[in-house]
Length: 174
Image (cartoon, rainbow, N blue to C red; front, side, top):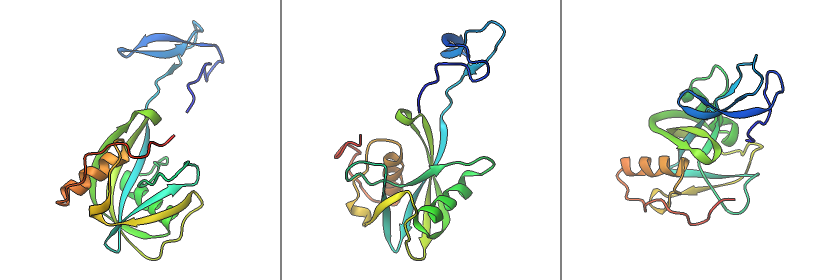
């Protein structure tokens, strides 16, 4: 997401200003009070357990062989545990149930707050329009990545009694 350069209310340039104890972008017009707070975007993530394995998927927009959890933006008026089930159905065509809340994780590079759940799913996988492919992985074979959803996956595997390797970059996404 690009940082705005102009006020969304009056189109005057934004300038660095002290707001709420931090330096933020604020409108330069003296009669405008607009502040770009740059709050993180909430995103839900699912560790999808399907037929005894974990589903990892590759988004069509991602280069290379990077696979990750099912994720999606929290829509207006949605609650996270319902949103994660909607995403699992939209992206995989599966019906699921939330088994547990895993945790929340900051993803600074994308300015997102990841809200992660363990979802048990059933049905037949039919990829949604955003996904290029998927893999079914054994719990013991997964190597979590060291950011956001990878940390959620790591925490979930540990809670299930597995000893996954400490997250480290094996293939760094662009």
